[in-house]
Each structure stands twice: as structure tokens, then as C-alpha cells.
Length: 242
Image (cartoon, rainbow, N blue to C red; front, side, top):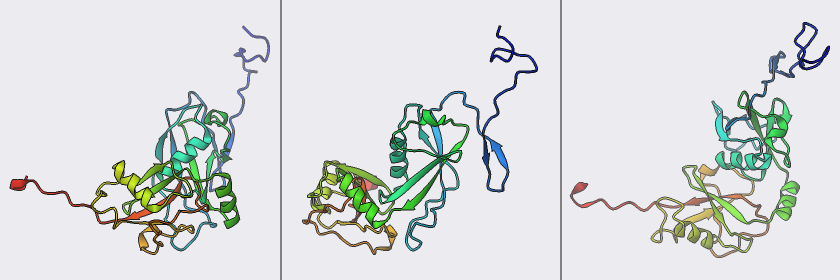
């Protein structure tokens, strides 16, 4: 069925709607993927940080291959952004820019709004926020949780945090929840919690140590990254060398 030029028509006069093209780095163009079904996952490729990111001491986020993240049409953009930031240990003091076929994904929308499919890769870049932007972010989003990162790069969340929370209380929460391997009651007092708002390289030992009993303060942004330094408790060897 279908009249002349209708979608149901199959005559030679029926023309398919052209698919959008994306410019490539070499100046050519490639077709955007046709959307069959939205995926159970999405490929995310971290690009090299753009020029606004600190040159000295900022960890390189470039990855050789995309990483798969669970996805669905109803998944909110801000939820995916948070998953990516947590996975790659990106500080909230950095803006995570996600692009799908050249289009920047905006908060307040879902993946289905951008016809995201697993036929392509979501490209991500990082931009350093300005001091004024971070101050405004801390005012709009008071801290309710923090990420604590160990020196091996693994990070865990500590919830029910406020600006009045002390580093000692954060360390106690890590021990009670058994969130950090090798950290217990025997060595928690000697452990140090570090933070630097400029987000310099974490492994250099240059991060300032926070006083155990002083509040973390109102300048801390929600989901901020702290670093814990400690000497792991050695597991006792079983008798008989087993």
C-alpha cells in the first residue's frame, strides 16, 4: 500500500533520508550509525586532556582502547557522567565533556535523546574549571560524600559527609566499612588523609596532609577526591607455612 512518495512506497522514486555525516580528523566524512536498538552498553573513550588542564602534575587520562559502561535509553546523561568520572578518578573540579558524533551531551537529558547506540564511541575530554567556577560549584552542591583514593589508584565512596566532618571520622568510616584493604584499627591512627584543590599529581607525595581533627571545610565540593596514605597491615602467616 501507500501512495506516490509515501513511506510505504517501494518504487524507484522513493528516496531514503540521507544519514548525517561526521567530519573526521583528516577532513573527510563518515556516516553516523543507523539506530537499530539502543545498547546494553556504550563505549567510552577518554581523549587526552585539552589545553586548559594543568600541564604539570595532572594525571594523563588517555586510554588506548574504549571502556564499556552499562547504558540504556532512559539512562540520564548526568548519571553516565558520574560513572565515567568515578571510573577514571576525575575530580569534580574538572569538567567532563562527553561528545556523541560531535554533539555535546547535556545534563537534563537521557541517552535516548541523542540516539546513542553501540555502533559508535562516546568521546570524552576534560577541562579544568576556574577558581570562581569551583567556588560556585561548592556553594550549589555542598559536600555529602567524598571519594577516597589509595596510592594504587583504587577509590571508594564515603557517604553522610558534611563540611564539619573531620579526616579522623572519614578514616574511621573506612575501617568500619572495611572499604580499604590493609587498613584497620591497628594502623588507622598512623594513616594520613591528603587533599589538594589544584589536583596535582597524586603519586609525588607533595599533597598536603589534612589535620585529623579539623573540619574539611566549606570549600570541598560534593564527590571530591581525597588520598589516603598508610602502611598496610601484613596478614599473619598460618602455622606450618600454609
